[in-house]
Length: 257
Image (cartoon, rainbow, N blue to C red; front, side):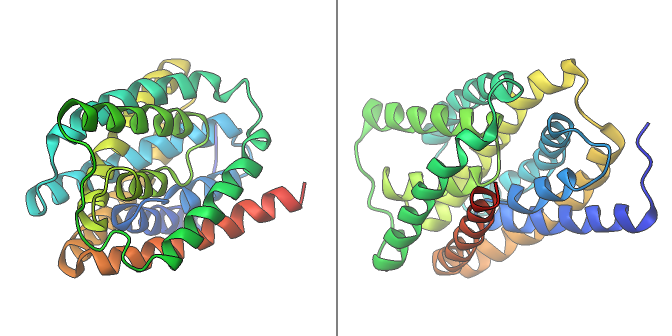
């Protein structure tokens, strides 16, 4: 049985709170929460990934509801994207114990650098809705985004919300605020898809996950309300900061191998 001292528990709860806030605004809360779990002695990578999903789903459910009430994201886009993401996340979770994460990190790092440069060099990106495709074409592209990013979330996780936001902005043409609102609904589905595999496999540390989830929930509520109040410009700034931090984190992992 895992035994943690009071300081470790407090730091993990703080990580959950911060992760919930970041994830609610623009995604990427796993950048904080998953590494914190991986640093705890006695926790295997699969246990950390599974417990992170439990904590995250509590936060994403809160932020998704908050965004739905205040922004009203288009469920015609959210529905097919979320279903495809759930299936992708389940498949990714099945592969999580079989494929070393180190194979993916250099590729993800290059993609993130490109995303950051594109966002910084195009100030108008995500400033307003400029939707591409209509009808079934829009839904098919949205579902494809959900499937690919869902698989990544089940396999690794950190930065999933960030990838969802930039895909919805750059590919489908949403502005940052509604993109973040849609991303929360989809992110809830990816967390659920991964848990459908992790829970029966016994990988979830329930006590720790529920405690961090409660902290994540509080952070998510605060973050979602701030994002709605301050709009797409605020979300864009936080997005750039989170992507920059994710690049630093993955860059360190790649260079220190």
